[in-house]
Image (cartoon, rainbow, N blue to C red; front, side, top):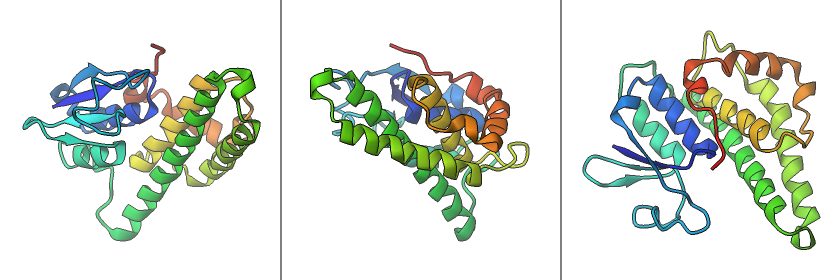
Length: 202
């Protein structure tokens, strides 16, 4: 298998964490394929031009991160990251959707801030920032003891918190006020799968 990736992508990080937790990271070749400025290395496999895109051994592609993570969870010997019971499965998927949605807002903030000052939309920046702040508050309700539970929902939340800390350290999203979330993050960030996937700039 080949994983098309860009080092700063939190969605790629989620997939890589899942691969490590499932003990199958050595079965995946990591191939850099940057989506900016033009995703020419990605579009032959994914019309969206986005990472992550996973190429299976038969050449067929999988995208995006929720689909890839579910596929990887069906493999390997690590603990299941998606429960089989409907109620528990929906709870984990809802948490993943919350974290991925926050990441969408955070990525939009990064992109908006890259535009020239005169072209930025302050209204959209405030909208995205408000969404991130609401998600941060909700995360405190959604996190669980990482010693007991580290499923796909918790992985997604970790990637969201890590991305905001990495990309937008100068914006106050209220993380410091969420004491339980801070305590959780101080433990989770030291987990080997997270330590091995620290984001880097390209």
